[in-house]
Length: 142
Image (tube, rainbow, N blue to C red):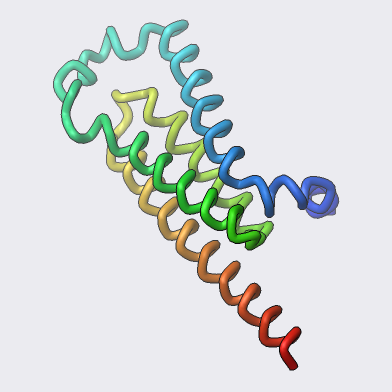
């Protein structure tokens, strides 16, 4: 019950401001991940990051965030509210994948799987938001 009241309290930013929340989540958890890896020097001891540094894999999280930001910005300009629960799940997936991306010695497939789930959440959020908007338009025309 506490989670539901918390979500209801922040309904407006979570349904209208997903574009900015996506960027804040990405940069915030990216910074936290870099701080953790800097404190523990994890990447220097494992050495795996040097093997894939500067490849197309490095661009996947950044490109996905740009896509998420662009889609949510488009929904914001069209004044379409996103679904509250799916938005929270999507922000959680973005935060998790961004944080785990900092730890390269972890299996990269986990991070890419979370990014893939993020795209599914984006699609579900857009689909549900557009359906709700369409129903509101049809209801107002009747």
